[in-house]
Length: 408
Image (tube, rainbow, N blue to C red; front, side):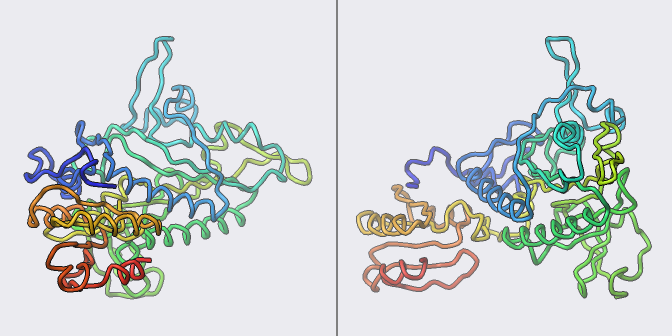
């Protein structure tokens, strides 16, 4: 994409009504626009990043057998009455329709997926399987002040699995757990994200969270760096040793929850009589698991972790563009490089605007593409173009031919 065709522009001043770093820098760089507290629109650059995260999580969920579906955002109130959660979850948006019926904007989808699956499961031969969706959720958060990390409207992936017995649920649960680890590595959070023991709430004694360490976090986690396990302080306030390896040197860190997984058992199959007939003809309730990742929250967490004083440093696999190509009055030569990179399938943001070097450098650092390529009279006189990784300070001159080989 040529930057002259990009309708958005960067902003020099910090947004006055935004406290979180992730929202401040994403707004300044033109990735998102704030509509209200906890409600953001994604602009071209931001949507490219979000779609890359979406692509990666789709690949990982399909790798563990997940079948993608799309459930509705609007649900009849009766589904939530049936599980008893309408009055116990205080962040639900409720509204009335013109048909005089009451509806819920779904904050999660157990109430909708369970009666759906009941229509297709009758026998043990229909099990196991899993479905997932990536969809906008709505939660009436009272503390919507952490940018994308705690929103009232946000994009979330939820996977639901259905099983005939506990052994099968346990096995699949472990498979998804490993898929989550792979996902966080691919989006650049692997080193700073630990599997964390947490309160299972109404589902079970314990659940598992994935917590990313950052000072922007709202959770406190006791961390065992020996085996990379975390313990959420909300459930085990006086934990002295790691329950996994016995390490007594636990470190207290602030963290953001970027995913969670639960063994639901029959909590949602029972209200909807989601059952199957076993080989002996007996009726049994289906066992369920659920596995969530907030995509927009992950994006916010990545920004909190991957940045410096100049701006964002995007991990390569989710960056809006792989290369930010800057031309300083050498548009003809830069155009040749732009077309060559595009022919290789390399995603390039080409800054062909009539701006000064300082402004172009500052905006490139703010936007944060993994590689910056500079074409100027000085670089051409030195034998080529200047290549710089966003995460490094050093630059080097390479020929256009070597640049193509390098990036390829």
